[in-house]
Length: 407
Image (cartoon, rainbow, N blue to C red; front, side, top):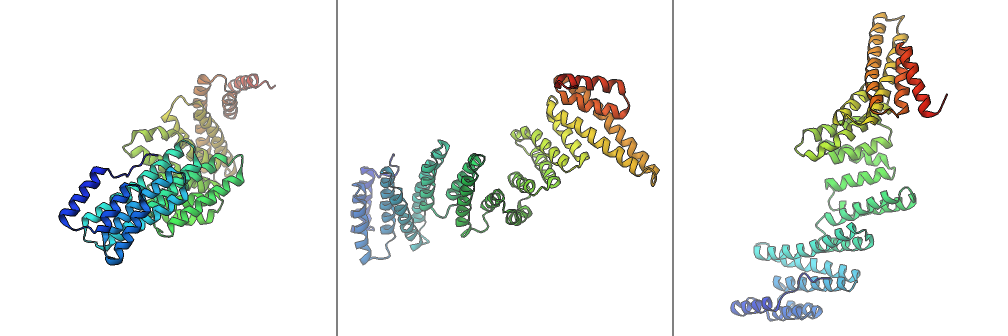
């Protein structure tokens, strides 16, 4: 692996010249810089320890110990010694922060420490992401853990690792539910580890709720989601996660409403790429409303989906089916209230027949576009039979029988 942090001989020489001119650097620190250049990192650490016995408040000494530990960590990575690298990164972090905190008014030292910590963190995080992309999951986990050791103040390292485990759980869930559960438990442990010090971290809390949902700990997930929706109710990613919870809880109407809410957000944002998801969102809303037997909302959602793609015959088939079911429901209700409320009965009958007639229009368009879709002819024929158009119904039912090979 490339050594990202090697100090060149020219740079070291320049540092020594500056030290000689200013007299601000101890001899022990100057020696340590030379040891670092010679890759004798433990000697660099030891010689600074000697100097700190005489001047324990030397931020430069602690800074260069951090540099030595950083390079020691890189060397361990090159040798595939991830345990040693993790230990060295933790030590580097400790030394750097000591240097920074020793004089909070020294902005130059604060900037140097910040840059050094960022280098350790970004290099290992980048390696972890690359390994993840290449499906080298064990190596990716190692680098993510190194990244967290290098900069435990950051949340990205553990979140990436937890997200990777969540993704792996999805991959293996169908074939190995136990392995999926174990991966999700690992992800939950990681998220809790970081949340312990960052209890208000929004995305980490959302990730935790998602994992709890997948583990069927829905009551715990719901508590977190309800809190997050108060402050982040316009976040589509959060809303889609909550839909997953509602689906497990069979709260289909609420899931349908959230699909519509996400669609409205995408419809009104400035990202044209989100428009490509509108058809799917409206269609999913329709499925949920249909499952909940809320036919007017299902019809409206499916109609919006069709507006996004007028050639999608599957959505048109859903619409015909909904017109059939909703029209039948209205006519049934009309019959139930005929004696007690004739006016209401007449209104329901009118609405029912109008709904069925609209189903005929959609059905005729569908069979013209999909002449081999047997169920399109079935739904159309059933609607026509209810409306009393016997001839058309018989013709479509005959086509259905021919396509399915039934009598």
